[in-house]
Image (cartoon, rainbow, N blue to C red; front, side):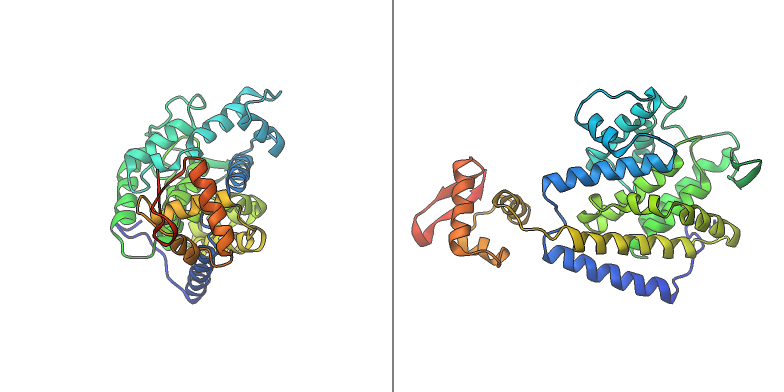
Length: 321
């Protein structure tokens, strides 16, 4: 990897995918799908955790992972239950991690691999290779240069002018190539790409990217290997952008559901913050509802102690408490 700039090319296929992803992000924002309803967010998180761990060999079913999140007891290997519990700790509060910080990166690994490896959160200092059958499919860089390689990678992430969409894919590939930890690199690569993408759009916290990777797992590993052989991540960037594009397509096709009054109130909180607003302001955001529905939404929020109300008739204003 050249200092600061990992090797890859922006080809026509990548440009087409960037345009497609950008257009879909616009549709997502217009339909307020960047912040799905709580139940949809929960289902997405469960699928994400299940898929990411299944890729790494965890045998728990989706129902078992759901039961663990519901604090129900299940009969399963302790290690696999711990993998789920650790992942839940990380995915429950992604905002605690700074995707541009190597310190935050190591802290996330420490949580994700707590109780599963000897030194969670510590980068390796030993040599390591990935064995498939009797042959090594990847020999990672020597342990004594791992930290400097990861520092260069984070410098690229912070300073390079390419789109975050591109940089998220490059980081994912390069991190897998460097293999900075003795174990847990795969789940960290997928987690960190999600964190980087959240800075591009909040919808990426809830997209089923890991689920689609699991469905195309053989292609995922094949393209990682091909990129290793070519010495550049261009093919992997194409693959991951296609995954992202398909995830957005799936979201637009399946989750453009009617909003409840609680959904609308929560969405508008994000839009307006603590500023005063009128019913007319509310209606400008939710053009598909009637004035009577808007009034019922706002009345409900006042009754529930979510909003405070001042003034009367046309001078009525609301503000989130």
